[in-house]
Length: 323
Image (cartoon, rainbow, N blue to C red; front, side):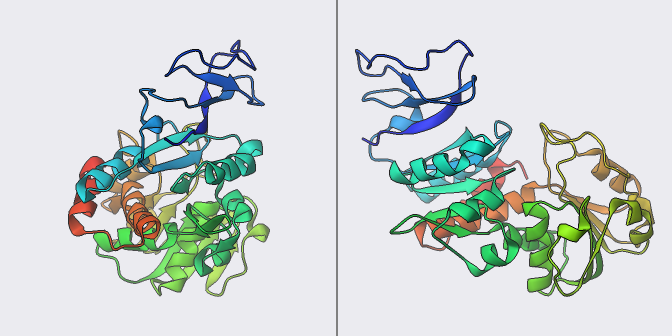
């Protein structure tokens, strides 16, 4: 079997150390620098999926991560493909990310996805990286190499593939909101794949954004003047996400976009976001973050297995997302 140690939430009064388990299936609690985050080591004959013998383990690391649809999506794909493996969501604090990534590699995890707020950290801990990950400055997929994790960014092409589901092959003017790893992947994907003519990139700190050709970096105070006539608005902020802000510095108005424009919100939930509801009311096409999630996940699976993902597997992953 594979002994694994993963971060889990435990009561604040959980012991910091414990005697070795006296029987198979018991948990050994140890470590953990946060009072409500500790680690457990698996022992034989336990009943949770991390301890199943001979099955590769994949995980998504983030904070927060409990809301993630990645486990359901990837496990549906693994079943449809007939591949062994389990996929779990693990909460990792920012200060513990490097340790967690190194531990996951040492313990034999087969592959990792990385989400907010760790995508830049994922690139930093890797021993090598793809061209896209280096250019974007962030990684959402880690693949096992001989000496450590190899960083990839499947978000960029995953986003572009999602636009294809809206029938978008090229747009003249795009406005992207947000300055994090997801926003970087979106902007790079739009430019590298020739999808956008001109991108206006809105961020709290526009001076910190990459100076890429075809991009105009602007602050939020300039948003209102950038939206009129634009063909595509992409929200890559954390507004509305668990633990994120509840409002934009300035509310984007989808009604001023060009006729036939589209609005994409990279977040997802049980109900459309307020931005998508306003966009629909204004007669604009809309898409939430499940399309990008699906297509980046398909590309991650291909990297982990070194094989093209069959259409039936993609369909199973799509059904798991209720798309």
